[in-house]
Length: 385
Image (cartoon, rainbow, N blue to C red; front, side):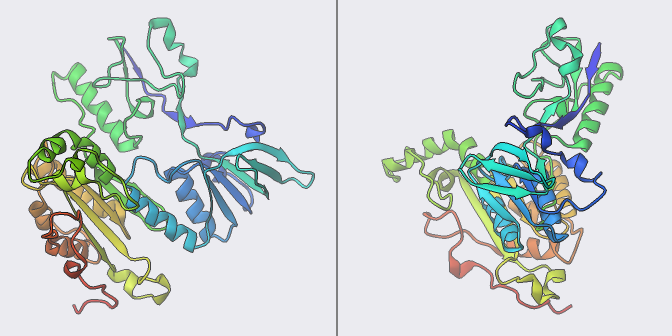
């Protein structure tokens, strides 16, 4: 038997002059400040690096081909983008580099697909990762790898060749997280050599993105939930009480699709964490913390997705991640279970839990969110302790 666990490497830019772009690994090895920097990509590596470079005083521009943080909740991603832009990070939307040319003074002139050009001290590629499998000659034994990124499609870490297994970043369509790879390897070894039968569960894995305003997510985004519950929504829409237009979802500026109204309830809250309320420079009236819980109305309000923007997102999200795995392994926890989850960080988790517990759905049945009159008032000062 063979196990492929070679990980991934940053994907190189394919445009002319792409060899001049460094990776995020190189960024931490520079012997001087990167200066004016252009980052190509819009994933978590691009936004995390762009955020701290701006904070260090570097003139930073991020070139975004389509959307920020593809696969994550759109509302939260839009809030992250707005926060970063307000703090000084520049964005070029809908464009990628078409050419990178070195200049006589050691800089790089970047031409974008939208026709604009600019000169930068550093260009960094953060447009995804490619599995480091090219040198393994896997095709010789029949293992099928993606021609795009070299990744392997597996079932329970087993490739299409029964005696070849894979874990970690080489897996197609699964979380690229070190703890996930470690756990998958442990469970695979137990099945192969310890007589165990339990497979790795890749659902509801807590994820944190360390952008300037930290983001934690578990389960489905609102868009994914609407898509996942579309079939049952159609059955609800067939009820005589609902007009036929409910059979065809629409997506206005704020995802208010009727499929979500049929089977999903979305609870949300904006709040000011205690540590933020101590500093007026935080602009908490404009950029506050945010929580969103997506519930399945057809299954006792089980939570199918939870999203958090605020400090210590990793710790906060991990706490709820345990609850979503523990309370109901198949469908997630209920909203009531969320409200009873054990508090890990009182300064922000308690506020989030308090607001989520007291939110109530709109009684009109036409809006996916509570009406403005039911939303808790904005907290502008620390609570009395």
